[in-house]
Length: 329
Image 1 (spheres, rainbow, N blue to C red):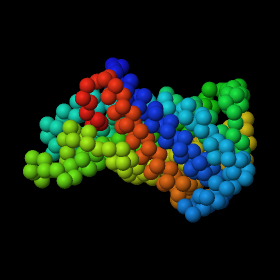
Image 2 (cartoon, rainbow, N blue to C red):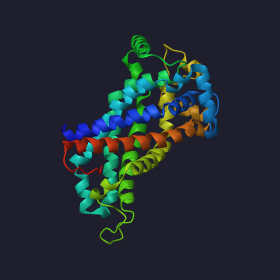
Image 3 (cartoon, one colour):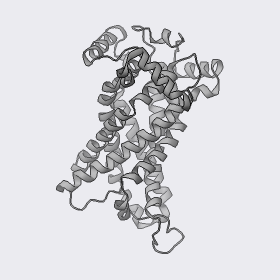
Image 4 (cartoon, rainbow, N blue to C red):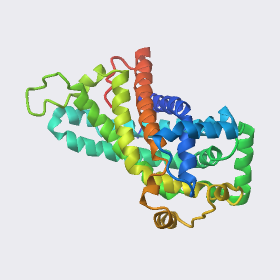
């Protein structure tokens, strides 16, 4: 893959989408993560989210709802930049737009290629930013909202006590979840766009008229991208959620803090050990612990990310970076 203007635009737009969505949804992220890592207590239902927010505010003040947000944005901007940049570089190099328009009846095969590109993009993004993910999770579940200096000092202490291996706790389930989620998210979003763009249009008057060509995608607006992005992200996140619970449990397994003791005192030796013990002691549904907050989070986060990505990309192309762009992905 060669670094081109398109790659830079896609990467920057993806980073912008990640920054905006993470900052807006931070309170839901804090509730979801603290519920995930806790081995005691039950899943917080939808109607319990306001009460959970009130508990966090009482414990840490309003800034507590944005615990870990600075580190999360510092991680999510490059994460999304890599993910969106790699994905679009791959789909462009594979000429998926041209393949799709040549024979729209092959849309399912193109969807598989998009899923493969999404999986590679998710894998690349995790590898590039994983240490920041560790810091984000630990700061999110701590009892105070740290300043950047405190976060940097904690990172230094963790390096001294745990070594660099400590920054890669939970890497395996994170990679598995990211590959699965990114594959589904990108493939579903792109495919849904083609079906949605064909609403009310007569394309070639065949039974495949419900699949719009790439050129028609430029008619989709901000609200369409939010709707389709939310649907793709919500379903994908639900399916990949058990990986997220396991990785969060492993991420707080640090000998230099008391997070494990605060959230139940259970220590795990591996991803398999974590999954086995969750199943045995907490039950199957604990793999979806925090699912209520996560459901709202996945819908809003993915919706905002894709909508901001598309609009940022449209804006940059209108600045004559490339004439008459097609916003098809």
